[in-house]
Length: 277
Image (spheres, rainbow, N blue to C red):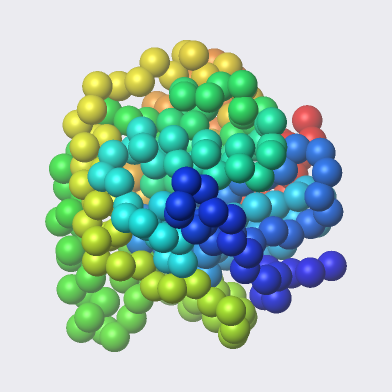
């Protein structure tokens, strides 16, 4: 089977904008569409998650508008990000999908479910919370602090944002980045400064937005996070799970924002069981 390491990058043009995407698994049935995190491009997906889900499902991951190898500019609001994701899914002629949203991608997945509920069968929301969550004003300071530490240590900021700075967390971070490096060719373009700033504005505005009525999202949802998430407070994930009518919450110990990557050996089977239920 083709793996995340070697699956080719494809493009599809939607209203004049070229969207970059990759596919895994056997086409047919309901595909799982992956929506990635703040500053991420296609190459920032953990291969163990993508390959694990693709063993039983048709998987599609893409760079949304203005991100990585996709053209145009990133919008600075979550609603438009959701609308762009809907346009991409429909352009591939899918009438129904499962969504896997991580961090910012989880917020975008909620927008898709609110704007086009008929399009969504199930959702996995990892390292994310509901719009209107408190404390989001801290995000620029958290990110800025992590970037400063990363610059001093000559490391990727996700060492400090995604994983705890203890022995277990540091080992998980090193393993995660080793997996990201497995794909050596046909890589996506890096995130642009415009995209980074627009995403940060969208996240901040989402935190200050009035809470959404999540009771209208009636599809089954699997919510997952680490027990000490610095970027999206873990209690926001728990609050979101309580407000969704049909949600299950998994909290992984001694982990943070990247808890699903740190605990991928447990997380992937949980996702497969959830999607098959």
